[in-house]
Image (cartoon, rainbow, N blue to C red; front, side, top):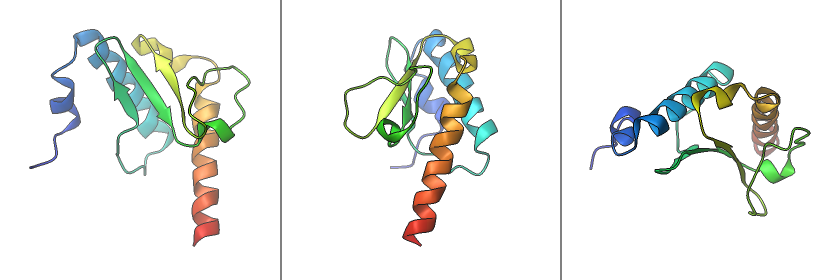
Length: 107
């Protein structure tokens, strides 16, 4: 089975969810242009969750992260402008820096 493109994946969701997912995806690639695209956006009929790997380990002064998982967290996004919420960019930059540090230690 061939992998579906991002746009193909979104066809099953309402236009409001597609708009939020597109906005979040653009933010991710703006902040992490060399990122390898894997599932980070969790889509549902109600909205989008921006998954943050090992988010439980990160400082979150704006209290954006949600979820009960002991390791991973997510930021709920209800509308495209939610990617401009104060604290989101620093949180994602911190997640990226943490990931890079882990890769260096593992190398």
